[in-house]
Length: 76
Image (cartoon, rainbow, N blue to C red; front, side):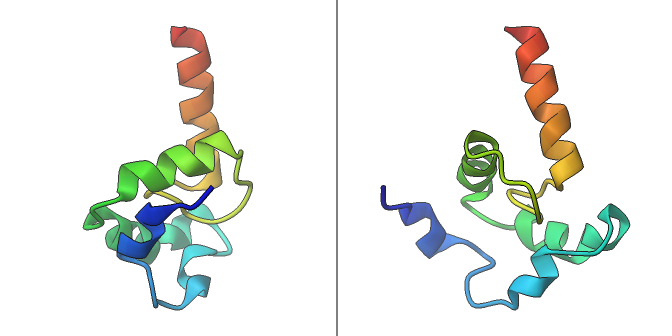
């Protein structure tokens, strides 16, 4: 499946290491990029769907994505 949203991502062309911080506290630079991204929601939904284990996707760290998944399970 082609993910055309990636072509429009604000992170395209940036150093990927920004999006793989050592700790959640160091994720602010990545989150700032994501905050202004037009495809942030598609990116986040992709990460949730494939259970992405590392990095900042759609403005959310792995811990935050796990929380979103738990909340969605409770709501359904």
